[in-house]
Length: 152
Image (cartoon, rainbow, N blue to C red; front, side, top):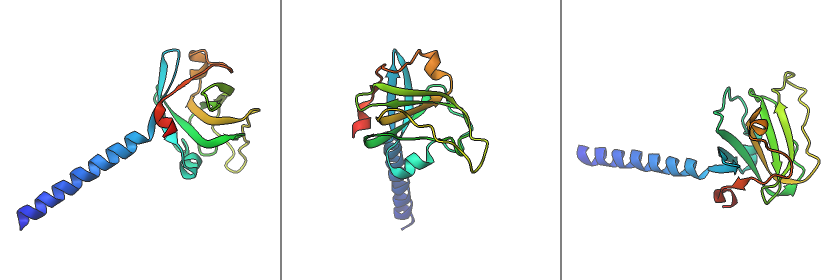
């Protein structure tokens, strides 16, 4: 009886590890521009988009977050509870950069964070560490390569 319980427990633990590994892997994509690639967490649901990069104290230089929306639109962003400076890049459905907001600073006022509003419609918003857009020479009109997992 004890052997069966131990076997079942090991099986459940292995199954849970495999499940969470594959679930987490499915929430990761890649965005590239001129040989510079970023592993990005995907924010596809309303809850994931609301949480974003809030309360994170650091992010590796080759990481980012890609906000994925169901349709094109004007998507304002703000820096409330975001602790690291960011470059925010709005992209259309083809991955073309339509707007870049560089060096968005953490919001100092707890209640009064202003929105960053792009002038054009977008389907995606990429957040990377502040200074990265300049480092890789990114500008409006450039096209980024979006990993196919973004469309699933």
